[in-house]
Image (cartoon, rainbow, N blue to C red; front, top):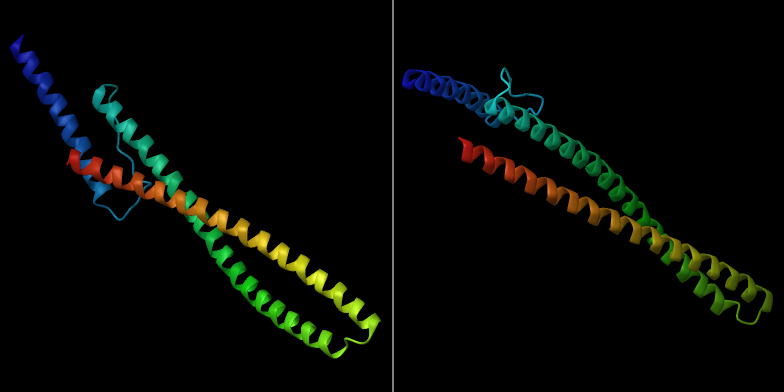
Length: 164
């Protein structure tokens, strides 16, 4: 009976060593999350491999999400640059309108037209302010997602180091 126990123990150790080598190859690789642990058993070692493969799939999904959010952030940055240019142009327009108001103070119809123009600019500034607020919110969400990904990656790294 003791001989059977020793043989079973040797088989389990051999399976664990095979999984450990595969995990080491994945951990020390170039970040290739398409690699999987090859599973050829339905025992605890097989469960370990399956769960690790599921974990890799989740990390891969998170990285795809981060990459997408990165593209969104890049687009937001481009939009913010355009907004800054528009705000500068609006400030110049506003300064010109004030100058025109001083020059045409005595002309009632010109003052009325200038007032309407200022209302439109104010609405435009309100719209730009709302857009900037939305972009800031999106950037905060993206930052939070990136932080979560980094925490997951650190957890995986620590788990891999513990198992090594």
